[in-house]
Image (cartoon, rainbow, N blue to C red; front, top):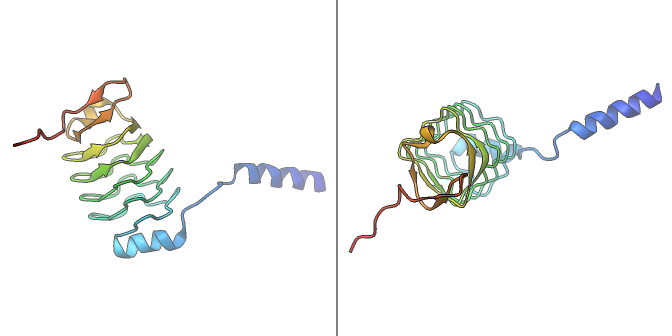
Length: 154
């Protein structure tokens, strides 16, 4: 009996998450709409109303923001690795120097989103990104995308 309990505990521990969101940071984000440099790793924020939120420099690795309202949000320097943003409203957001490796963007609203990063390999098809302004981004196929860059004016 002890051996089975020890094995069960070992299996459960191996599958346990190594890190989770800081509950105080999640509460601050939901209360104030601002969470600069926060640990929101694997936070469960599906459907959250976060229009205008400032998530600059925050770690959102593996977070679930599916269906969230993130219009006009600021993600400068945020880590969005493997973040679920499927069907999120990201219109008018700024994603400068973010890590979009493995980020799920299926069905997300990307109208007038500004993306500028060198870590860009989201789970999405090119057609879904059409409304976004993409500037200085190395696409998964290796080409440099600059279609959304503003031309220098004199």
